[in-house]
Length: 267
Length: 142
Image 1 (cartoon, chains in turn blue, yellow):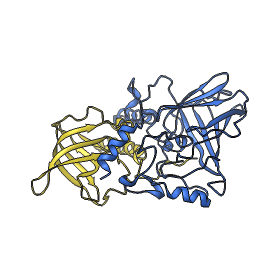
Image 2 (cartoon, chains in turn purple, yellow):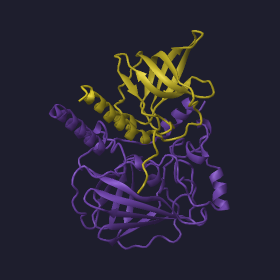
Image 3 (cartoon, helix red, strand yellow):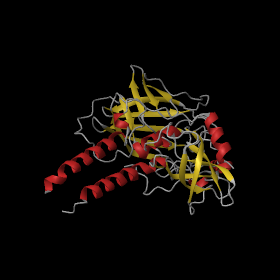
Image 4 (tube, chains in turn cyan, red):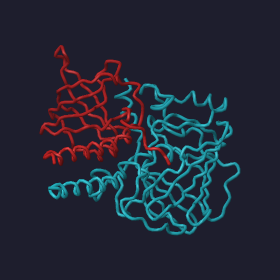
């Protein structure tokens, strides 16, 4: 009698396992995969191998944990940061307003999300490419990329602000890649809740590879002009390595589509 | 053993999949929507917009007085909706559909789509939609 249910149960378990890897329907699609359907905090479906040394190449995904929709518990704001934050009318979180009042530069105007918002909201699958002089990070969301210089250069002292800042990286040990960034344009928000930052912000990313299939990302924000203390919005965020052959869906928040959405729903 | 066991098991698996997917859809806020109300309307599709930040369906439906109103109801973005089995080709103009939605508080014919029954009887669920409260806390960073 028990064998009667073995096949359907085994089959269902297999379906769930596949779903956990790539999402309910994307695992068989040759095009337009949208990544993991859930957080990869659960154990890997396949037995992991050891972490290769000083190697992050591949497509990584935090699943649902990468979205960070409602913002973060930040360090207390300085008066300057508080005043700037009050000008942010967000679509979610503590500064949430109706759609017609929303002034999120990303989702209502199609401005670049910027760095580190692309790590805090919304971190969809991204590909890491290592070159002799740099590490490139290619993000599915917005179809943006960052260059993280690994050639030993120092960060600029008084940089012109950039949407995605200036970044240098180094291997702290064989499995930990540390990135430091400065020069981020303060027009960008940190998350979907309108958390502000200044152009004095420094960001540290720590990519710690646990094994062949997983790594953890920790992000620390140090912005004494906007916050009274450093804070850690991402603490060991688990990332799963996706198959190298998947084609990722295009996910670009365009200005014209944002305007059309606001015209229809901002009534 | 209960003969209905496989069906129950598969239903649980399906619900688990929906639960696991839902946090992806909670992108923005719900300040514009009346989350205490739900309407079910029969209507005719006028447009299906497959776009970021949210896809939306426009359809004509009669109100209580017989007046036709053109509704616009949103779901999540193409990435998340693809995962839920929706597609750019899910609707075409003139499709007769039954839409269950949460309206906005203002009374305008705008809402957040919860589910829709297609002309062939298939039901598509939004999996939560824009700003819907997630059914569980979002996955925590460890």
